[in-house]
Amino acid sequence: MARRFYQTTPIYYVNDRPHLGTAYTMVNADALARWHRMLGDDVHFLTGTDEHGLKIARAAAERGVSPKEWADRTSELFRSAWQALSISNDDFIRTTEPRHRTSVRRFMQAIHDNGHIYLGEYAGWYCVACEVYYPEAELAEGRTCPVHAKPVEWLVEENYFFRLSAFSERLLDWLGRDPAPVRPEVRSNEAASYVRHGLEDISITRTSIDWGIPVPWDDAHVVYVWYDALVNYITAIGYGSDEERFRSWWPASHHLIGKDILRFHCVWWPAMCMAAGIDPPAEVFVHGFLTVGGEKMSKTRANQIDPLELASDVGVEPLRYHLLREVSLGADGDFSYESLLARYNADLANNLGNLLARVTTLVAQKLGGVGPAPGERSVVRSAFEQGIGDIRAAWGASQPQLALERTWALIGAANAELEASEPWKLPPGPELEDVLGDALEALRLVAILAAPAMPAAAATIWSRIGLPGAPDEPGRAAPDGDLAWGRYPGGLAVLKGAPLFPRRRTEEPGASVGVP
Image 1: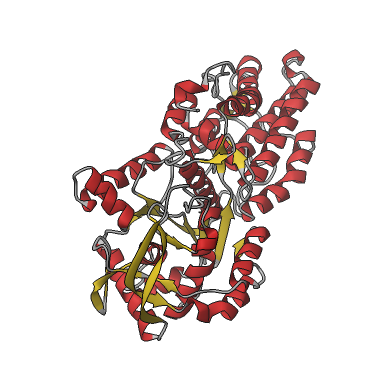
Image 2 (image 1 turned 90 degrees about the horizontal axis):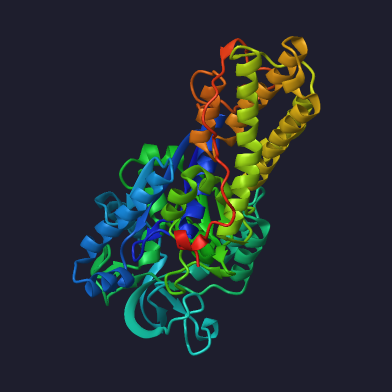
């Protein structure tokens, strides 16, 4: 039976449009989902938009429209952006959907019935942009939000509270499991430190606004936006509506989030699950920030980059490759247009594109366009067999950057062998066929291994070397699949085509694509 793999992303707040930071999360999640499909896993990939709360109500009022109208308009920007970037999500959830309302109310009722919710009054400093109350000690200079650098507001209202403080020991037990549910280790340690520092009960409802989901036992209150949003992960797999489906998918969840929302996903959310009587998520992988000039992208800092503008300039697949290859998932990384072009020219134009062009041209010129089978022993085969274990391990550890680095080492070995053997000087015969057969086999393997990052380019390579089907078919990367040396059959029609990645001039200005 296929293993279940439930890949999720944060759901994005509809107060603004997608930027390169959100695209970074999406492309990484997409590559992981694609890899697991290729392993033969039963994959469900979820993303969506978070549409309730004071910030949305105010944004809509400023524009003279209802919150629902504003949410409809902005949510579509995210949906269309992910389609344009070849994101292969299976579902797109909106927190204004009836299915989510049903799920949230049942989840809240379960926690209430289990005795973990009580009525009280809350007063504190509130950041509208974060939709979070901050203790005075966490505020930045001038009593501003530590994330958005905007003044916070003092709010006082009657709220229902969640007894987060009752879950300290259970959370530490969960965080201490082997394998660890929160990765990388530094983020697990950060979550554990937060718990050990002492948990306070959290306010989970509002009476000051009505743009939200009504509390099931008290319709004068609406569910606080964060508490509402986190439930999306179980709404999408049937919680409250299809118990059998929910049990078949939960807790096989793999949440990919940014480090700025670690507290909500690695402390609040598992405690909420425990309180409702369900298991916490199987894994939360916390990635770092993709910054510009050392600063996290945000509307308040006016340093956002439109990923669709970049994609229209360099291409969707080069952008996807750069986002995956440039930064190790989990670490912070700084984006620049210059590094994007440098990576494009070095890895895509000079290495992969050049290998495909060389091989298909030589097969056309010297072998009548018919590709030969690979040899039994070769330098290229050794490079593949030495690297494939690391590549598989890297994908399994949610490290696309390392997996692609090892894949490009195979491309480098294939190009180096062509330089050493100089097939353009060889006459037709067994020696030439062995050299070109090995190169074709390298291209076949690279097409499979690069498919999670660049599905369209991988499909082009696959078809040009004459193979039927697609490189990213389910099961293609399974242990008994096609990631083994010698599967290129030979005797196939090889097609020479236009350059896969035409070289770009490095002096092209980043300002043309909105890069500060």
